Length: 209
Image (cartoon, rainbow, N blue to C red):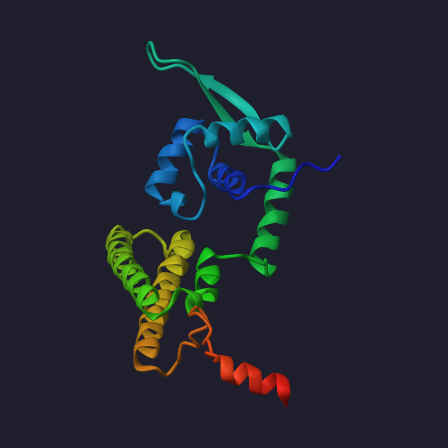
C-alpha cells in the first residue's frame, strides 16, 4: 500500500534527516534557525505528530535513544530507503508541477468595487504599511544569511518568498495610484440604483395612451 502523500512539514523533516540522524528537539531548533516556519505551517506539537506519522508509515526509523543526565530520553530518527524514495518523488512534484493555489488576497481584490473607493484605499494602505515592515524584516534576515556565509542554495526558498513580498508591495502601491488617479475607475455598483419619480399625471397619461 502506498503511503500518504508527504505534507510540507513531513518533507521538511526528511530534508533535515538528509543531513544525518537527529531527534525532534534538534529538528525544531534547526527549523527555527533556518526560518522554516516561513514556508511551513509549524505549530506547537505538529512537528512531533509529523515525526510519529512518518515513523508509523515506515519513512523514518529509530536509530538510537539518548539520555543527558536527568533529562528524558530523546529518540534519534534516521531516514529509511522508503522515506528517501518518497522524499525524492514529492520533491520533484513540488518543484516541477504547477499547483493551483487560492490566495486570500485574490478574493479581496474581487470585491473592491462593492466596497467602494474610500474603504478600499484605507485597507490597501494598511496592507502596504504591513508589507513595508515585512520587507524590511526580510532584508534583515537576508543580511544575516549573507554575513553568516550560509550557502545560498540552502535559502532559495527564503529568497523567493522575499522577492514575492517585494513584488506584492510594488504591485499594491501601483494599484493604489491607479485607483486614486481614476485610471482604474470604480463602477459604483455598490450604490443604490437611481429611482425615477412618477407623478399621478404621468401615470394617468400612461394608462390612456
